[in-house]
Length: 368
Length: 123
Image (cartoon, rainbow over all chains, first blue to last red; front, side, top):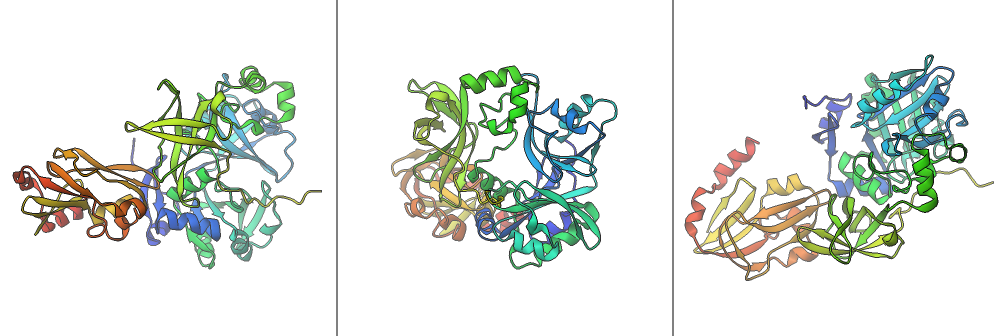
């Protein structure tokens, strides 16, 4: 691996006292004040996250939406202007190449993919694009997330109008004459925003946000504990090319029209699993005591045979208890089921628990 | 009483053949918020370099190795209820275990506080 690359906010993070680590080929802030303090600040106020390592892509051309549909199981053609959807890049066996966010903009289909997988995603997508559809990797853009119940108060002061967005809506906004693309979305389970900003303006925007009393910077450490509490999978850990959307319990990403047409990669296998069930399923786990179980720890059956594994495990700062995600046999996947996990020669009893572990607080449109 | 340090960031206070072991300020800072500590039970026989305790932060688990061989007299039971003592007072209240050494010559390779400080400054 070559040297890690610095992102536009590198100097700003260091000035805030961040501890920087290598992640997905970039130098990223892992923490500032401490993971628990940053985690709680995000749940109570507003956390500023630099997620500029993620890939921002733009598909342009008349049939960009149709082209993307050949690679994902979501309804992209009927995605309205300024609407956003979670989707999955699938291989022909129905395995997950990446999870991503897709939004329709005036200038094209905007996609955000994971940092560690973006090079492979771009190659995969480009190889499947028809003539007339072009992929642009928006390398000049930084991506800042502002997450928490007070994110809307802080951001509205700097960028008027963002409060009109509901969860999974997005639009173009203005910051001192600089165009921003802002969506009401995130990876913490809280209300909040993700802001695409030209790299040369990222520091000015971070400063303006940090000047708001609600805002503190939050590192990758708390980002992970927040998304785990929210029950959100992390690519490369909880989902990968060996897992299907059904096994990963991401069936909501299979849009109705696409299911009925059965016209996405791996549709045959995925739709069969949807009817008959997958062999194993991603579930949430809670544990007694305080000791976490970690990624890789095997799930054992009554005979002591490994039948699954923990894919994310840690300590929940909100619940002050260990929580985890694991793949377990479907017979043990019902909430309340007790399962056995082995770690360092020690056996742990875990209880299958519905996710999210901590309720989501999304700003959804009022029900009509 | 003399205090020695290991390259794995443990400290050991020695008085005769009795010793108290913990992790250093530098180690707790690197680990971040500590949420669980498993200390050895009294009577446990440990070899120098053997895994003696487990310390879990929000993000990861780490082992604590015994800097010397001997028999554990006591694990710090206060850490069960308050693992964060290792963050707030790593080199005093947050000690891990007390041990009766079987071979005090094992202390010879360890660093004193000055050498340890130089070691950490170079990391």
